[in-house]
Image (cartoon, rainbow, N blue to C red; front, side):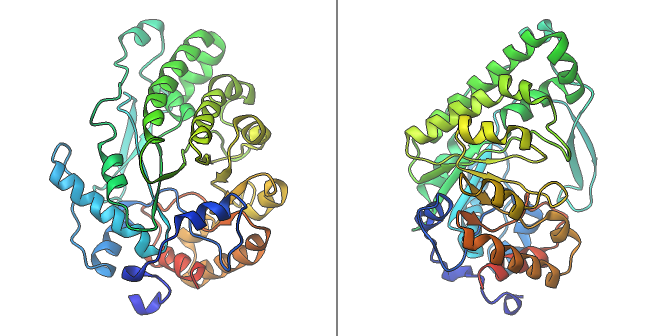
Length: 364
């Protein structure tokens, strides 16, 4: 397999996370753009870990620290071998949220978990009062701390709390429930957002102190194909102030604040740039606004991350993937503040060969 991807560094990696940060922040120009990625499913990482890197795959068993650390060792080894300059990691506090579970043969466990759009865990003040709000414990940051202490030379750590304010707000109410509550019980929405935001703040204020952390890179999907999922004014009231607070915390510690947010969020982009203070945007879909168009509009103000449309990665041939990567590099890299990767993430249904073709072409 390695002969088809000759530019992958594998065991000869020479990461330079400072270069990555300087490029995205517009302080440096390089011959090629650095790589970036938001999430990579274990369904793709496992065959790469075992077949390309020759390592034994270990499934983490909750509460079994030995297996958890072995899993993290593989997690660390994966990123420099693929050409990344960083390890990106996230975990969520145990918010109680409703799910719908369906069959999915592309997943290792054969299951895919979806948000329940109609039934949440909070619909009233009585629900709010009995909700088991999570708190930060000594174990909350255990995996972050392990990664921090075991980074290879030249690598940095990009971290966040898994799931953003809006995502957890809409999961706790359910999307349908939130849409009603915005008008029927705005005080309850405010209270729930406050509790979520404070809990996440307790995580972030410790993450920024970890050695090796070079950026805060959260995700908060606030849009769909044609607009934001709730009115922009609701996002400005309930969610953006928390992002602003987290961004200021990052900046006060000398760290940039990148944001992954899916969907059409153009209505709040000026808020995100000018008020929240994000330093780069990730998540692009060609059907909404291709990354090159977004960069032409906003690229002098923030960095742009990713851009290779997931539809091409999922359904295209390796040759089509390579052609799209080359096209994006030719268009976006000369403008600066650009890192190449998927437009969203690497889910389980993307062929391994397409993922590796994207990386190999970008590293060429």
